[in-house]
Length: 353
Image (cartoon, rainbow, N blue to C red; front, side):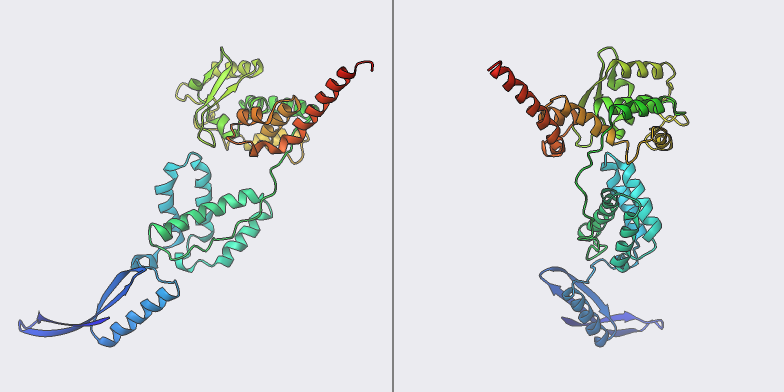
C-alpha cells in the first residue's frame, strides 16, 4: 500500500511550504507490518516490492540493525545470555572462542553453509564425531536464538549438518593395564593426578565431577563423597575406598587455605580440569595404553561391575544414568555372568545324576 501524505514545513527563509511524501506500508498476516516514508512515489513502490519479494523468498529480516551484525556479535551475545545457565560453561567458552576465530568476521546473513561443512570435515580428521557435534551444536543454538528471539537472522544454516556418531565406546582396562596406569599416575609430576585416576577407576565419576569436588562434599571418616553438580543435574553419592581416602588425607594436609576445591590448580587455586591434560597423556604413554581416554576409566569401572554380576539397574545407579539405555553396552558382560551362574546352579541340581 502506498499513501500520499501532504504536510507543511517551515523553510530556511521562514516561509511555510507544503510538502508531499509517500509512505509505503507492507502488511502480511505472517509478518509484522513494515512502514517507511520516501520523497517520491517511485522510491516507495520499489521499497515495498523488495520487502514483499524478500518475504516470499523467506529472506526477509525484520530488524534493520541485523544487516550489520556479524557472527562475532551473535556469539558474544550468546556468551553473555546463555553461558550463565550452563553447568559445563567452560566447554561452551571453548566452542564460542573457536567459532569467533574461524568465522567471527562474517555477517550473519552472509555465512556460507559450505564453509561450516568444510570446517566440520577438517575437525573430523583429528577429533571424534561426538566432539565435532558439540562444537556445531553451540553455533547452531546461537543461530536458533538469532532467528527466533533476537530477529538477527531469518534462517539457520546449521540445520542437518551433524556427523553420525558411532556407538558408545566400550574400552576398558585389563588388570595389567590398571596396574601400569596407576603406577604411571603415582609417579606423575602432577600432585593430584594419581588421586583423580584412583577415584575415576573406583567410582566411575567423570573428570568434571571429580575436579568439581570440594572439601565440604566429602566425609573421609565414612568414605563418602557427594557430587553436587552432575551431567544430568541429579546429586550422586560416591563410595570412597580406603586407598582413595588415604590419598585425600595427604592432599588435605597441604591444601590451600584460599580454596575449598580438593583438586585445585596449584598455581591459582582454580579448577584443575584442563591443567592435568598434559600429565594425563604422559602417564597414559608411560603405561603403554593405546586408544584410551580419561573417560574410559568410567567404562572400566562399569565393566568391572558388570563382570562382578551387578545388574544393569545397579550399574546405571552407580554411574548416575536415569535410564538403562545408557548401560546397555554392558549387557553382554552381565549376561555372561548370569549364564555362568545358571550353569553352576544347574550342575548342583543334577548332582551325581
